[in-house]
Length: 246
Image 1: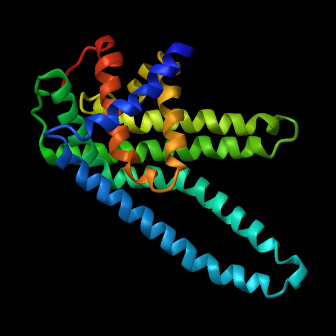
Image 2: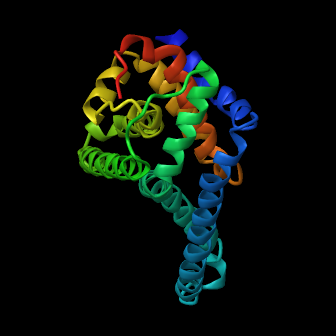
């Protein structure tokens, strides 16, 4: 388990090296540009909406309580980080899903030296990728509601922060392993069963992604790095246990 956590973490470095490989760079550009645009738009919109509200609220506060403005912004920033992680990331992946699926396919071909046999049209790949992401979004919302409920139950809520971290790590593994696994027609249920057998690997990969996602600027390149790293993990650790068909 511990060894698998370390291996999972290491695949982020592998992904970083892969996205600069010859023949892969051009597939990184579109999802990277989408990520930068969406993050930038979210930050700009959030600031333009919250800044006047904060100023209005502080206008009722005496000068000696001006330090409350910093606390208020800290709260808003923390809330925004949670929204970005649990809502923005899945939505961004829905938009970028077709490009990420193609990128995962090219990375796998680079690693294995073999083409992924496919009789499926590009439009079918796009549709399947988007539908898979929507299915995961529903899964995320249902589990998030349950964890939110636990967070408000006295005594039990002590463990809720740890549950959120575990869930977030698991979620990110599901999010990005879907691309290489989906390219081989594994259903969402099959993907979950496969990753449960290697929980340490999944949590190590997803946990390290959580950390990178929370770091400004660096989070812009997380998406392509995660797709490439997840594909390498699929090829090295997971694909041999499954009969691949497409």
